[in-house]
Image 1 (cartoon, rainbow, N blue to C red):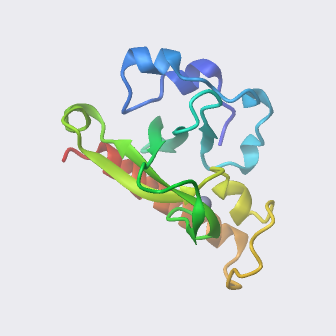
Image 2 (cartoon, rainbow, N blue to C red):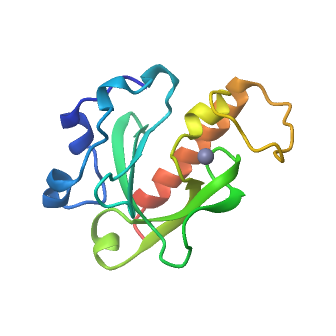
Amino acid sequence: MKPLTEIDVRSSFVNLTKGATKRLNLPADLAERPWEELDYLGWQDPKAPQNHYLVTEHDGRLCGVALRASRETRGPRKTMCALCTTVGDVALLVANRAGRAGQDGNSVGTYICADLDCSLKVRGKRKLDSAVVHETLSVEQKVDRLVGNLDSFVARVLRPA
Ligand SMILES: [Zn+2]
């Protein structure tokens, strides 16, 4: 993806109020992220660790989604990420739906790599658990699958309930 500035990121959120968008803590290393290897920008709020954020392109525009760690799960556990299908430390993250639906309490939950580093995993830039089943897909195919899963997740957040 193309490098994002603080303004890009803050103005992209689809499920936060303007006030919350201004207050959220951006990653300290925003300028040094390996953008050319990312399908989404993901980070955990350094000051409010239950809050996670991801920003990606969807339908030709930038979409930021605020997520929070589900209270039902205590920390990450070994399961499969719904985005990149890697098995590892995965967190159940919940996003309020965009607009009215979200204000009414409608949310969408999914399992995502706790470090929000799916892009690096599918490109072989992260060490994976040895128990992972060997896949014969190429990096491009894995990236395509990640982008497809990410797209349908963002679509679920945007879709009116
Ligand atoms: Zn993942």
